[in-house]
Amino acid sequence: MKLNWFRNKQNHMLLKFVVVILLMGFAFRLVFFRSTTVSPILEQTPIVQKSVVPNPSPDPYPKTVSPILQEKTEVPIPIPIPNPNPNPNPNPNPPVYLQVQENEDQVLPKENFEEKCDLLTGDWIPNPSGPTYTNQSCSLIESHQNCINNGRPDTGYLYWRWNPRDCELPPFNPERFLEAMRDKTWALIGDSISRNHVQSLLCMLSQVEQAVQVYHDEDYRSKRWQFPSYNFTISVIWSPFLVKADIFEDFNGVSTSEVELYLDKLDKKWTDQFQNLDYMIISSGKWFLKSAIYHENDTVLGCHYCPKRNLTELGFDFAYQKSLRFVLDFIVSSNHKGLIFFRTSTPDHFENGEWSSGGNCLRTAPVKEGEMELKDLNRILRKVELEEFEKAALKASENGVKLKLLDLTMLSLLRPDGHPGPYREFYPYAKDRNATVQNDCLHWCLPGPIDSWNDVIMEMVVNG
Figure (cartoon, helix red, strand yellow):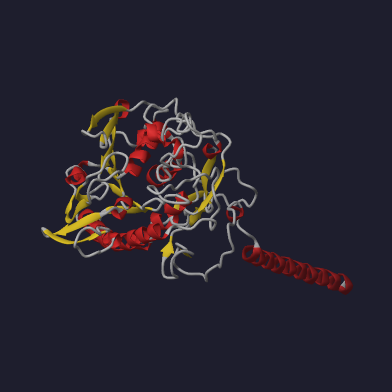
């Protein structure tokens, strides 16, 4: 009897011991599972980069530090909302993400994300598909830029496209551009390069709808076109100095007297239309290299390259800086609500001389970065432009004026093959293979490299 009682007691104690062991194992497993197992929701979230997990905090909204800003700047990250079903088995319902946002002044501005993509640093790469239009499909190409029609024998310059190194640059989408510009007005303001550019833009848009010319000035230098289906208007306003100027020169650049330039008077051809324009691309530069007399406060200050005059030589950079500062001050103080681009001047590619001294441009392919340097004159123009824009950009930001830099100088420098050269004229060597002809190594063939400017502008204005 005692033996049976002892055995029963022993079994009872053994049973209790087993139960205790099982309970301890279950508790240990539960604690260990929660501390080491990754949530199935987090498992479904791809890990982009190594992250540091912050210490537990009562703040329910975790934060991450932007790599672009300093450590004090914080941006929201997606917060997974857990599925109410605690079943650890795979859930067919994907996690829902809630965008949690701190105060607006702590959020990384969109512009800073865009700055990671440098559209203007890259290379020209082969483009087997070629241009989107031809000199036959577009009737708006002026004769001096219609290189194929004028007999240029090589066509390799047509089969390249600009390729930024840090990001993709989609090709210009004319339909999307027109739709985005419905009921808007554009103007390209400057010299003949602006006129060259507007032809390129019109030709690319003509794939969707033909532009209708609705205005031209007496010399056909300023023009306006409309796209009726979109109520969209594009103008080119010829104002090579942007300030008031009396010019004594024919269409081929032959002068009879110095330019009379008024450094304290803006050119009304563009200022009178300024407030009615939604988008502008303003540029200048090359014309300041010409011989000119400088006026300010109704007084002659001096000149640039006027050896027959008894005037102080002030230099073209003096006049360019004063004029550009005056122009940009007007813009940043204007309370204009549209978008204004300041485009840097584009380099010429004259070799073995200049425009008036037998210079030519015989290259037939792009060059790589570092293989060609800016000429001294172009470098001086660019220095003035970047300095004055930097000052103006600060004032524009303070005043709420949208002023952006369109720096196409270095992109264009790599395309010495894209100019008309002797094919500025119709078959220049038809009568004499050794004829001396005027070479144009400043303007651009159409189609040609200048078409890629529109790819960049499309990305900055529409896609960006």
